[in-house]
Length: 293
Image (cartoon, rainbow, N blue to C red; front, side, top):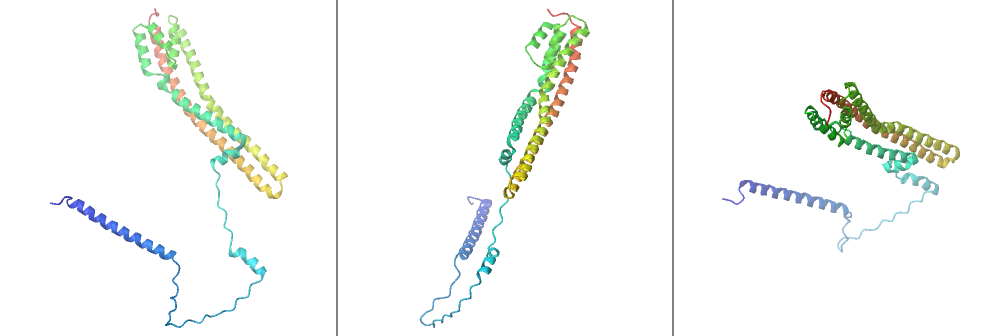
């Protein structure tokens, strides 16, 4: 009985074969590389027994004229072509100028607002289902005072609407309903006002990009008019690149801001729909119970 068994022995044997093959390949490649780096083999040195060959002296070739040498020099050693250098993001920012800095600042503001609204403006936060069930249970049990105090400690959309209805309990149905609708409209307007800033940034961003483009094109035409022929092309290319960078930055900011705005607008519509559905139930419950103590 062996220690390793048949499978470990086969594994060790295969590993030894692969190691030997790798050593052979490595040694062969090393010998080939050394042979390429070593100088070409020279003729053996003459010995005393072999006769010394007589050196053959060839006359020097006539030197070509200087004009032919100067003409052939560029063709013999052509200068290498310059490597293409792409414009980096930092180069774009620097070439954009003041307008580009304003667009970057608006991008940071828009991104921060979008993240904040994505976290805060959610149906689960503005219309928490646990709060709705608890308030309905308290109103059905006749504890309107407890339901009102529970709404005072919260700032959700549905809590503010329900508090406005409970405050006017004891009046007619249309009075309670109108109070809740007024509070709902006020809260909905506040939510629309919040996300409208993203829409404003999305509208202003292309105009800022266009402003930067116009300013850069003015510089490009000024370079044509006032610069000499040697620096005209460089100045014009720099201004045209600045114009395109401002246009692209403004469009990118507008697209980002409007995408977040339309998504958050859908969320606001969903929140308002949930509040309206629960408000109708609360109106029925409030008008059917006695006044809070």
